Length: 155
Image (tube, rainbow, N blue to C red; front, side, top):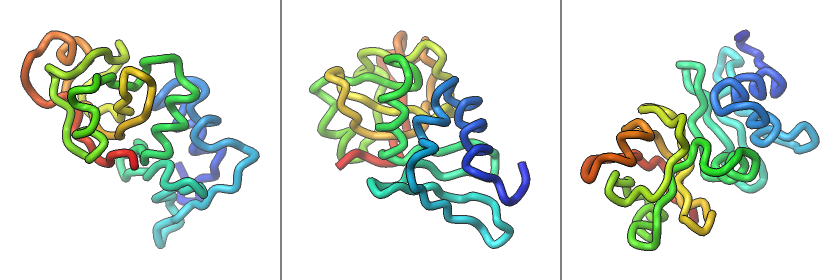
């Protein structure tokens, strides 16, 4: 991707990383978004009025902001790219604490280690965003271990 990637280019990357429809959900064509760029012109962060949507890493993958997590959750079928937790761990996750496997109630079947995921309460509320440390099958099967390294808790 060239240094001056457009929002259309970023939509393609989002669709590739998260599935069809993710690009339009994260970067709606009719919304004014701010793109912070590096000195070479490469996109670094995309923000909306409600907060950070994504950061764009040098590895060509997005890391989600809480606003990006909310947008992704509203667009993708439940529980794709999500890890669902219940009442017991919800307040801790919202405060930015990591998710452990024994508290995972559900998880999108395609989740792999190092994937960006949205942590949601079983009522659908977005609690946090972070990086999966285990695969979906491991999250379901394991009784111990970190499932999601939380980057940011929701307000």
